[in-house]
Image (cartoon, rainbow, N blue to C red; front, side):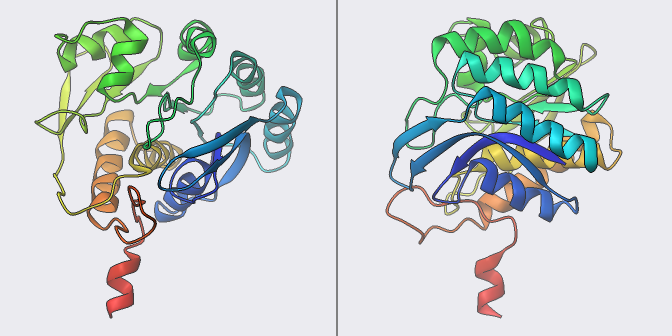
Length: 259
């Protein structure tokens, strides 16, 4: 399993969350880092992009030696990074690609500039097996208005070129993910955890989805299984870490500490 994403120095999201989700789902994780962030639970203090050349080299190195069964793509940041990832995907063959279009950090910091957003839509989405935007991200990517339904957003996302879409429902009252691949939309219900912690939930969801694809699940099966993993991780979230939103916990660390 390969994650192409940014590094979160606080360990809650990004590459760090992806590797934990991969391990939770029983797959070996590899990484190609796209950016280094200086961040904690309160906010993102600094972001430094990795050069396009080393992004491609990271992917090529693991693909040529170890092989890649699936790819999860997270934080990209710039159009140059998007182009590097598009080039790098040429080394992974027919491996399924899951794209989590990371636009805003949990703290509110912007993680994708306008030029990168356009490049993502034009050049990366058509190469994607599953794209997993939340509702606000889907509105930006499709240009849809505030009154658009989750199904409208899913249909709009599919029209941009990916093979399938999961519009996650964490920003809605119903808390339902919507899967759509051109057939009938499928609702994937979840649980609301008022006492949980959600930092890294999107990364965990998309990484788990990619991991289940690597293990041979269909896209719908992978989306359903990923929702269960992400929901449980939010429910077990580490609320006492840092002064801001705590990270999700895919391993149930707090429960284990009590035993």
